[in-house]
Image (cartoon, rainbow, N blue to C red; front, top):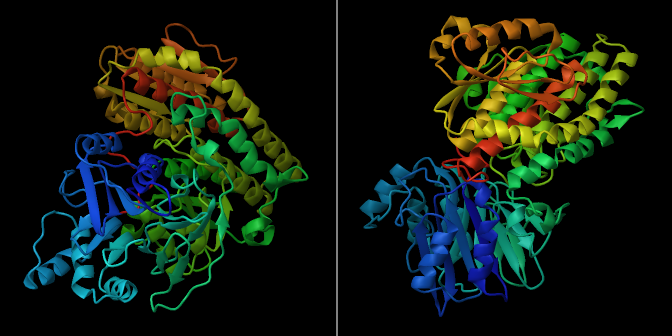
Length: 606
């Protein structure tokens, strides 16, 4: 959520800032701005809207010219999207960009107003800028160290001091920030894609660490201004991985990357035909002692956890609670010392999931993070980490991250069931082999793209629709519905098919689309009965089922078939047509597929 960049070096700063910000557009934003050292002062240009609007404004007015500056894309939290509320904020002496939320800004604003400061914006960020100015005594590092002791909440800050041209200062708490290291140039950024064009080397800032950058040096200090030695990280993927590669949208590219992403995630964790999770300290002795576990995530990650719950409970007979991260703390969960809490997140920076992790640790639970982003806050704070290897996921709507999250949950479920003695080694190998085959099945499912596009053409005029399913198919319905609504803006809900008669069926109108997922053999006939209920009330039915299923013309108007696989593993394959239907519906409606309105890829505020 939001994007911060900064550059100091020998290149034209404005060009670098705009390019770097363009690589962070997936994070979601509604305004953009830059601040550049120019002729002994800090020049600021900002506007409501997209980066193209900022560039257009500079073409009509003036474009800052310099070699050191900071930039920002804002996702509104305090104050509506507007030119005034856009970042950067500050005055002639100090300029700031900020990700996160300052929780005590009203108290600070009142204090600063009493000192004679006047506020132009509605943002919490302007309070930080003015607090820095209030305490500034000529020493930026001491000023920053003082200010971070007074502000409460989450933040990543990029700061320019007029008295120090050619220097960028940065500090973070809970919101992500990295320091890119180049050849006679250095960077700050919210995420790695912003700097890949220029360097793959970077430092990860820890909480309350302060960085000072010039074109030839990076110095990092702790909150007490003691120097910190840090390990230089290197991104394992290059700039090509963060580009569209000939696809019309990042989302379509990422859908097509799923077969390889699944293989890359699971194969290193399979030894002698069975899952081996010892890399992160998970062994059979530990698993055998688990009698209850929690899975916590937001949105798509939470849906992956629901699939995991079905599989773990069925195979291992272990109770699983799945929680929305934003609700987990507030229901005051009963967590006993030593219980396992699994946190699922693509970015590793999701604020609600991070808060759930900290609560779990406070109560003595063991924590396992399933994360895509190496070195992220949740990856660093969890007791154990299972990295997914999806590579960069740029589209806001998650596809390949979801698939690999499910894949890791399957590996864990299989090994847990074996450790608990509920499946044999033979069955363990059989399930593992089936999971390996899903990458080929996913490839075959992607070949249904034309069918999915045709079905999408029948949905674009719908005002509302339903997804239904039972068991694992219901879990998939939840994800399919989320994808459709976030991309196409069509109202969509998912229901357990058996719940229709308890009220939801009253919503069915003539020609209303209902997408029915029916891949579970033992539940198929019951699902068919529910499909007939909506069909009898005039619904248009789109069925998703496995190859070989006989579907009569009076049952469904359109059918998408997916390759038959091990029944427990069908979500790995069935999700593909649901993703494609959502994608093509959005494309045909003319929606911004990779950057849906109001949404952000990495939600770093609660």
